[in-house]
Image (tube, rainbow, N blue to C red; front, top):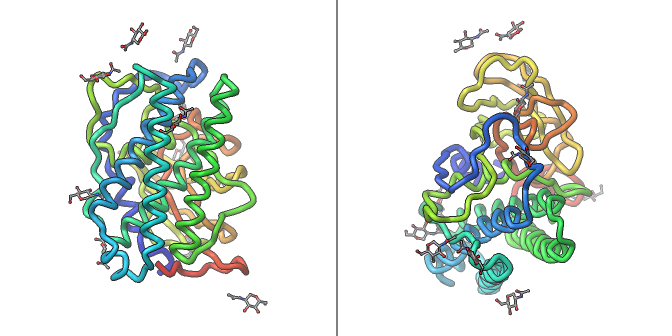
Length: 308
Ligand SMILES: *[C@@H]1O[C@H](CO)[C@@H](O)[C@H](O)[C@H]1NC(C)=O
Ligand SMILES: *[C@@H]1O[C@H](CO)[C@@H](O)[C@H](O)[C@H]1NC(C)=O
Ligand SMILES: *[C@@H]1O[C@H](CO)[C@@H](O)[C@H](O)[C@H]1NC(C)=O
Ligand SMILES: *[C@@H]1O[C@H](CO)[C@@H](O)[C@H](O)[C@H]1NC(C)=O
Ligand SMILES: *[C@@H]1O[C@H](CO)[C@@H](O)[C@H](O)[C@H]1NC(C)=O
Ligand SMILES: *[C@@H]1O[C@H](CO)[C@@H](O)[C@H](O)[C@H]1NC(C)=O
Ligand SMILES: *[C@@H]1O[C@H](CO)[C@@H](O)[C@H](O)[C@H]1NC(C)=O
Ligand SMILES: *[C@@H]1O[C@H](CO)[C@@H](O)[C@H](O)[C@H]1NC(C)=O
Ligand SMILES: *[C@@H]1O[C@H](CO)[C@@H](O)[C@H](O)[C@H]1NC(C)=O
Ligand SMILES: *[C@@H]1O[C@H](CO)[C@@H](O)[C@H](O)[C@H]1NC(C)=O
Ligand SMILES: CC(=O)N[C@H]1CO[C@H](CO)[C@@H](O)[C@@H]1O
C-alpha cells in the first residue's frame, strides 16, 4: 500500500456536484477573452474552498486527535498557520476584486479523521499550486502576477511541508511542478462544491467529465482501467499522464473503458487526463479528468510508502 488515502481521492473526484455559476461555453474551449477579474475570481473560488476546509477541519480535530494519530502539537500548530494563510489570501483577493468578489460556497468534505484531513490537505495544496502555475499566464496586469507568484510559492511550501515533514514522503515531484489549466483544476475542485450563492459573479470555466482510474492504488508499471461518463471508442484519444511540463501520452484502445500501463518512471504527484491530442494537454484538448495520483518516493528515487 503506497498511498493510504488514494481510494478517498478517487471518490473525491468521482462525484460531480458543481453548481457554481459559470459562463457556459458552447463549442470549443476558448479562454482567449478571459479577464484578470475572471482569473482572480477563479483563484478566490479555490481559496474560499481551502479556507473552509482548514477552518472546519481544525475545528473538528483537536490537539488530542492529532496526538492519538501520532503527531506532536507542532503539526496542528503549523496547520493553524496554513489556515491563516488561506484566510489572508481570501481577504487580499477580495480586497483587490471589491464588489465583484465571489462569495464562499457550501462544501462537502465528508467526515474526516486526522489521517483523511492530512491526505485531503496534501491534495488541495498540490492542486492549488498547479492552479496558480497554470493560470498565471492569463493575467495581464504584472502587479497581479507578482501577487499570484507570491501566493503560488506559499502553496508549494505548504504542499512540501505536508507531503515530506508530515507524511514522511518526497518533498517535490520532479524538477518542474505540473501546471493545470482552468477547467482541469475546476474539475477537481467542483467535486466538493455543493452549491454557491446564485448571485455570485460567473466564472468562465466548465468542469470536464470526471475520470476514474481503477484500481485506485495502482503504481508506476502497473495497469489501470480508465473510464468516464460518455466514453466511447478510444480511437484518437490518449491517456495523458501530467507530470512536470512534459506529459506522457498513451494511445487509448477499447470502447467505454481503456486499460493503460502507468509509465514506470513516474514519481510524486501525477495527474491523469484523457486528451484528443498527443502534443498538447491544456483545456482545448482535454476530454475528461484529470484525476490525481501520489507515487511517493525516497531519496534514492525508489517508490516508498508514506508514513502517514
Ligand atoms: C478535442 O477535445 C476538445 C475538448 O473537449 C473539444 O472541444 C474538441 O472538439 C475535440 N477535438 C476533436 C477533433 O475531437
Ligand atoms: C471573444 O471575443 C471575440 C471578439 O470580441 C468574440 O467574437 C468571441 O465570441 C469571444 N469568445 C468567447 C468565448 O466569448
Ligand atoms: C467538520 O465536521 C462537519 C460536521 O461533521 C463536517 O460536515 C465537515 O465536513 C468537517 N470538515 C472537515 C474539513 O472535515
Ligand atoms: C460595483 O461598484 C461599481 C462602482 O463602485 C458599480 O458601478 C457596480 O455596479 C458595482 N457592481 C456590483 C455587482 O455591485
Ligand atoms: C450577492 O448577495 C449578497 C447578499 O445578498 C451580497 O452581499 C453580495 O455582495 C452579492 N454579490 C454580488 C456579486 O452582487
Ligand atoms: C479515517 O477514516 C478513513 C476513511 O473513513 C478510514 O479508512 C480510516 O481507518 C480512519 N482512520 C482512523 C485512524 O480512524
Ligand atoms: C497490462 O495490460 C496489457 C494489455 O493491455 C497486458 O499485455 C499486460 O500484461 C498488463 N500488464 C500487467 C502488469 O498486468
Ligand atoms: C473504433 O473506431 C475505429 C474506426 O473508427 C475502428 O477501426 C475500431 O474498430 C473501433 N474500435 C472499437 C473498440 O470499437
Ligand atoms: C461502444 O459501446 C457502446 C455501448 O457499450 C455501443 O453502443 C457501441 O456500439 C460500441 N461501439 C463500437 C464501435 O463497438
Ligand atoms: C540509498 O542508496 C544508498 C547507496 O546505494 C544506500 O546506502 C541507502 O541505504 C539507500 N537508501 C534507501 C532509503 O534505500
Ligand atoms: C495588498 C493587500 O490587500 N494586502 C492585504 C492582505 O491582507 C492583509 C490581512 O488581511 C492586509 O493587512 C494587507 O493589507
